Image (cartoon, rainbow, N blue to C red):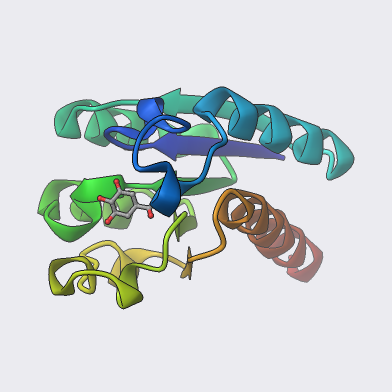
Length: 148
Ligand code: DQA
């Protein structure tokens, strides 16, 4: 099973960026944990990070060979019709995740344009949000394969 992991803007700064909100783990730490869990779950990951909306759209458009996407769209969660439309356009289930609980923060973060086209959303568990999202993705795909 192949899972595409997409980290949106500013997530390359994890570890030093507002660590009281986003935690002390770097993106490299999180990617390492994701790869270990993927091994355990027999999944193969392709991990991308981009600070550019159009590049994230391109990455999603090229997701056709993947079984699932896990995406932290970061600030684009709240603004990007283009990323939402890209997710809706490809027939690959996407799990939206956030390190922080976006619903308990500033009001502008409460609205996700991505959530209506995502399979589901995980928010507020720190780096564990990524691990939970990967577990959810693998379980969705396994269930789908068992049903067919
Ligand atoms: C975030 C939450 C967003 O509101 C914010 O813009 C981010 C990170 C999170 O993981 O908690 O950059 O997606």
